[in-house]
Image: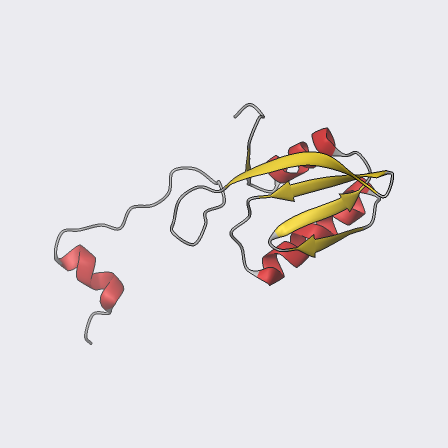
Length: 107
């Protein structure tokens, strides 16, 4: 039986580095820091979370969780989530619970 590539590192004495935290990582392996803010659109508030480096399916799943938890409509636009209404603090808590690093919040 021949060893695979994952065994090659251990044969050479190089163990792969495992991330020590549970934060979501972008395409380049760095921790993604998501920002959340509100904007006024047509006289109504919209909460926007941007800075994601994710696949569309992952963002669609996250949007479904946000819409269900926050009880509001929303959409994915250009790697950002737009949720109807002012939900900044609740959105930050929700994103942290899902494993995203959020700008402006502790830890």
